[in-house]
Image (cartoon, rainbow, N blue to C red):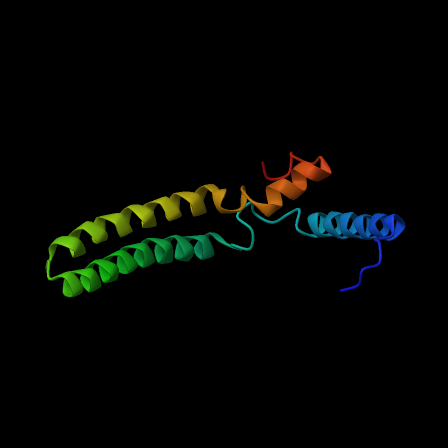
Length: 120
């Protein structure tokens, strides 16, 4: 890193190049589904199935491990099974509605660029 002051013309040039690259990317991906690179309905279906199974499996494994550690078999496994199932259903809902990409950097960038019609 240098201690030189930033040149505003270089920053403006960088900003212009970034906007051009984003515009080119949005033109190239205009015809794709809102869910991103889901591709086909079968791809989205597999993603939904994996989200649900992963939530249930992770919750059950965490509950099983805590049961073994605390000696409360099978109480925590049942509790975490339902927590994992709820998390899986929430992830499925987000994936199906395309909400997983509606918050965060993408939305903030579109808001800054003044383009809230694409994806919001």
